[in-house]
Length: 498
Image (cartoon, rainbow, N blue to C red; front, side):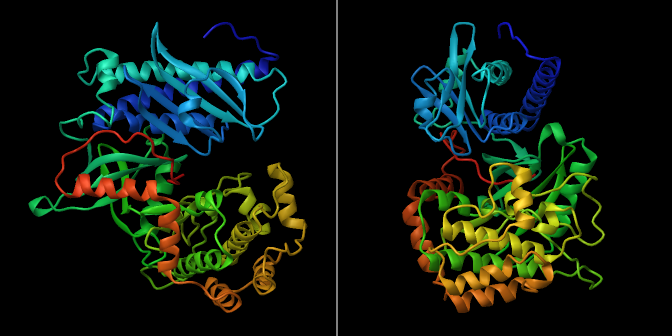
């Protein structure tokens, strides 16, 4: 790694803490993958996401190469540059949008394995030298993890084993990993608390379906608070039933770790959709109306005793609104929802949620009800129509203060009838907002009649043909008896758990 010079003792301690956390995490991920029969890309997926969170990176990638070129590539967030071009870089690079991309080679002696890259925002007085050293240290841990994985899975030489991952070659044969009764297919995405994988159920005569399996990350499986939150999500999710909410199928424990099984939503999240193109206002309003119907069902949910559960999502953003290729919108991640008699509570001084989509009462740490979610939906609608985030001040604390104190004026892009609904939803006091998500949905429908689901479906399928094709290939390969298959080359990260 070379000599690292620190400007202060605090900087050195922070560096060593981050490095120690990466070492522990790499060991846990490797052990977990080997125990569960998970593929290498599942481990890389977890490693990349967790390293990005440790370093506050907004995006990143890992690219592994064999003798003929890239064989496994994982991308997190929006890089702002072609991943296969960035995989050739080393050192710190200033991107067009002002962010810094730090690239470190993955190597074992003279043997080149690939590249690790992390995108970090901010101004660096030392031109990013200290950050680059930490990225290089992270890369060394990934080198060791890859080598150990390949050595312990009956590989021959390292590059020969990497070549076996190449999707252009014959599929990798042999049994796939399993969690409970579910056969693992491929990683779908990783969040702060859990990883989501595509899995296959197997029924009589080999019939089955593809599902999304969510499991607690290996290095968090012994954390009591994380486990409690995961159990809360299971209890809530298995009671939710609405076309605009993700369906939960199953919940269980395997080898000491809990997992959730949900429907596999074939589509893209609203954030990715908005970054790819600007949909017409009628489509935006239609997507938000569907999401509001799902929220209303969750807000109105009652427990087994018939009493209201008083669910509040608390973490709404464009990331957890999925727009399906069938035109159906699904609200994801009630995992941080606060329910009546919920065991998991927010620790004093910690505010859960994304600052740019919080309600004023959430930013102040006050008691929340369903109307807090309506404020968040108003912010999502504003961003989708105006093209900018309503109260983004470039700093979390300043943005939260703006949410509490600043008022908005109507952008010219937003039609006046829709703006009236939005103003009502974005009232600073909860009492001045709509009382229910259904009421807000009905007001939006009067202001801007929604389009049919088939129109949304056509638009999404047209804009994201590669992603649609990826789902179709998975279904052909794993539901039509075509074997277990190899690794998928590039899969953009999708919202999972926390």
